[in-house]
Length: 152
Image (cartoon, rainbow, N blue to C red; front, side, top):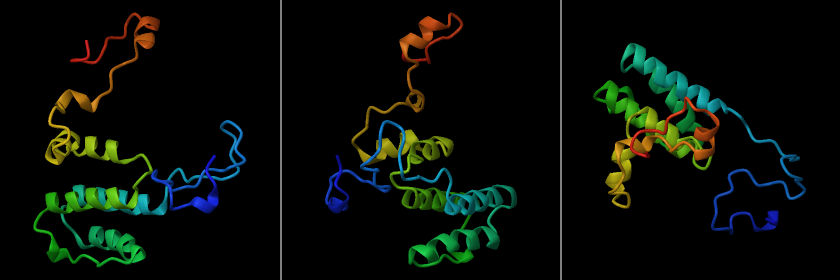
């Protein structure tokens, strides 16, 4: 069991400290389903996609950066819609560390495999690996289900 006094000493990241009195899935501490930072980043991303690079998107991103105590961006820091999209993706990586969002963010932006390969440790990563294999029990239970390609 994790001792709350040891917070920050563990090798594993605990963004939300587990409830030491938890019994099964019944915990005395709540974890957020969605945070205001995600609302701001989602809106910034959507406005960038709809209106291209714009001041409102940068202002929304800067609300998060100001709270985090890091330098704000200016509209002139970005040369394109794509450059701003990459900044939002990076910001999501920093803001939501250990919250289980990164993999889906990278898949949504089409960067999961390329970033894995760029790190060098996953040079065998392939495009089809953005999906997991379907468990055999699920395939056996549903005769209409087929295994994801390349896992057959």
